[in-house]
Image (cartoon, rainbow, N blue to C red; front, side, top):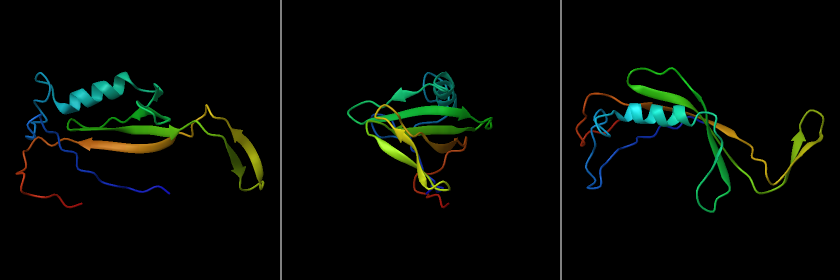
Length: 125
């Protein structure tokens, strides 16, 4: 059910040009911007924007390094009822209501290298 999936996140300006991650917003690094956002929203449940009935929360932050930001993000859906089945007792142990969300963990880690890579090179994981 859970897996490890690497993503490559590119940061570009309005002209679709790559941005310097260490001079991102008013001289701040993208790491500082992410860390500030995640820290200020830590353990704060929020509903997603739009019509989707999803909740999300930054559940925890890890120490990280001077070039990384890491933590645990939780997300879940609400708006429907369901039965929670206990596999050992072989019976329904709880009935979830429409205002409840099953919050699943998603561990994230952003590594923000200081060295600039040529755009023509690809990264293999």
